[in-house]
Structures are given as structure tokens and as C-alpha cells.
Image 1 (cartoon, one colour):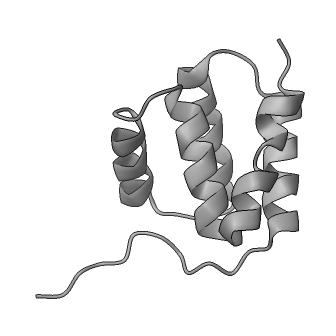
Image 2 (cartoon, helix red, strand yellow; image 1 turned 135 degrees about the vertical axis):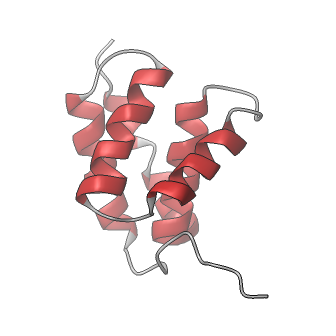
Image 3 (tube, one colour; image 1 turned 120 degrees about the vertical axis):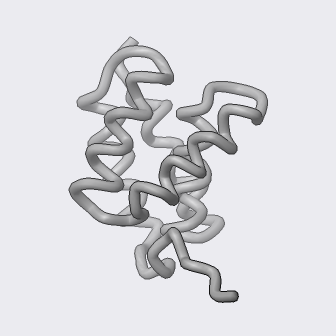
Length: 99
């Protein structure tokens, strides 16, 4: 039995993760559910960091974790794409998000 890989191999850099989430942080507004839609458009459709099934699975998993699902998805995407430093760089989204 073979197992399909749902995420692209980590080929990004922490700098790339920072830039993507900085853009999202400066341009998106609304609550966590709205952010998941912005994440999907930017990270699945435009940048192709992960496929649709992988993103849906990640969102479903993150809904069970404490805290906003969008924060958990953002941390996971930063970790998957940019490694441990990418996870930390992802913080640009929550720091610069309009309130």
C-alpha cells in the first residue's frame, strides 16, 4: 500500500515564509475563519505550498487544537515550509494583522 504525500517537500526558506505571512498580515482582516480562506487562496492556490486535500486535513486537525485554528494552521504551514525558524517567522501575520 502506497501513501500519497499531501505536502510539497520543504524547499522554502524562513525568509519566504516571513514574506508570505507579512503580506497576509497586512492585507487580510476578519476572524480566524476568514483567515483560513485567505491562507487557502495564498498558500494553496497561488503559491502551491500544499494541495487541497492536505490543506483540508491540516485545517481539520487544527480545529481540535486549543486556540484559533488559523493560528495553528499558520504555525504548521510555517514549520512545513521553512522549518523551525519558519514557524517563528510566521508570527508576522499575527503581529501586523489589522484590528
